[in-house]
Amino acid sequence: MTQPPNQPPQGGFGAPPGQPPAEGFGAPQQPPAQGGFGAPQGTPPPPAQPPRPGYGYPQQPGPYGPPAGPYGQQPGAHGQQPGPYAAPGPYGQPQPPTVPQPGYGYPQQPPQYPGGPGATPPPGGTGGGPFKGKPALVVAAAVAGLLVVGGTVYAVTSGGGDGKQPVAQHSDDPKASGTPVDPGDGSGDGGADPDNLNDGRRSGEAKVLWYKSAPDAPANGADAPGMWITGKTAVKAAYKQVFAYRVGDGDPAWGPITFPQKICAVTSAKSADDKVVVAYMNGTSDRAKCNQLQEIDLDTGRKGWTATVADGGLFDSAISVELTISGRTLMVGRSESGTAYDLGSGKKLYDKEKYGASCFPTAFAGSADRLVQVASCGAGGSNEHDEISELEPATGKVKWTQPVKKGWKVERTYSVDPLVVYMTNEDKKAWNISTLDAKGTFRSEVKVDEKFAPQCGWALLSTDLQGCQGVAVDTDTLYLPTDVSSGGNEIVAISLTDGKAKWRVKSPTDESMYPVKTEGGKLVAYVRPSYDAGGRVVSVPTTGATHTPTGLLRNPQHTADIEGGFYDGQIDWVDGRFYISTARLTGSDQAKEKLMMAFGN
Picture 1 (spheres, one colour):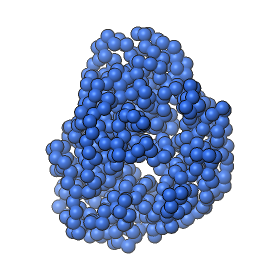
Picture 2 (spheres, one colour):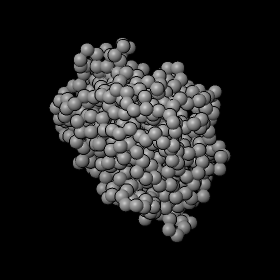
Picture 3 (cartoon, helix red, strand yellow):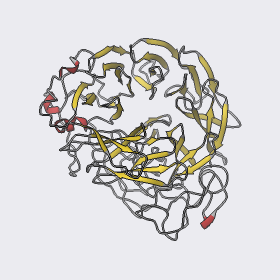
Picture 4 (cartoon, one colour):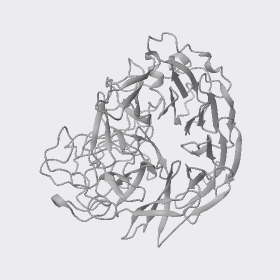
């Protein structure tokens, strides 16, 4: 990998003039926060705290293995120190203490301080580049020591960008609260539009195809994980149930599946034949495990095989698990091991356990053809470090392993194929986004001097490698949204070959725009709603000289408050329809909570 030119940055890109590049690839400029599109409903903001130092660029070795850069290479030009793995090192510089900045709403749970005592650096990709004293938001850390949290999040409220704080609405009138009466439990009347949500729709605006309220949840709230869209059904989990709606009109596709205890994990992606696996608790006590598995056919609602996940060794129970699909394999990850099952039959295939002197698998990520494992090695010792490996999904055979230098932690995978990983170094207050090739060799690192804000969720007791939205990757390009305190942001297209910016495109409105996916040689992006306009879905050409957004869908203005009010929202664009759903239920009994909404022409 070539060294970046030592010349003045243009437009905020590149290394500071006359300053040697350091590794770590940037510094998060915003606080850890849970990802998703939408605002908490009736949740007060966490109390402000005194600012603490943000993430800067390390001047010391970074994570990985051959010469300088994050992969462990020797010092290169400009006198930089070795970084995390195997090429000339990332950019960076120390960051000063910062002050809070207002956003569009509040985090749904209090995150930890970046770099604070005992805190975990924020996985999810906030940050990038020397920010020369730009402020960062600091939020209270009321949850002790268990949260691994995502990148910068601005939750949309009906207040738009006018600087006003959101106000929770409490009303028994569904129209006053912006919530329809259809309960979302299969008993409603689907596409009948009971609240006349399409009345007053302006020329050129999309239709509200359907809209569902959430089931009741306990007073302390409940998870609503996962959202899966097939050619026929839109399926959503919430608390103890899984609901399915016909994509066109929202009528029940099949009756709700109800579990005896709360759902605690799901496969974020569906299989090629539209199957998912849901995990639920085996009880309600403090010792209850997230160890009950149920396979579900998304199109028919047929319940397939079931299994009980065994505990691992000492300190390796199934209290919390992560579920990952890779081809025809389901990997169930515990804190220090994993068990693979055949996705078709539920038959156990193999275990991934301790290897070497002291290496334990801690997280997994999968795609149609690849399964990636992250392991923690030598915990507490002088050789403590992470390792990334690729496994043969059907057998668990290790194809390659890439050690990461001490102090660097693999937090997220922005993509598995190609493999793009986000890492942090808490001691150095630094981050790194790197690409590995098919053999596990370091390929490139992001060199763009920018603040980035993909939307990444919470990961309790486990590492949610694939828990980010608002980021997209194709064969040779990474698409990341910039982080702005006001006005429209930009999406930056970054080369996976050299880590440099290829082009950037500005949001067509004064609200932030986020990558959703790439399809047909174009980038599909979502523009958040504001107080006077619904959200938009746009298409951006990824090749050629111009990258002007073209509108695919413009959601109605009069439902913007509903669209922007989904708690920690999850989004998708499938077959010309836009879907948004909640990822968390607050348990409020003063008004029906939102569950899911679909727009289309």
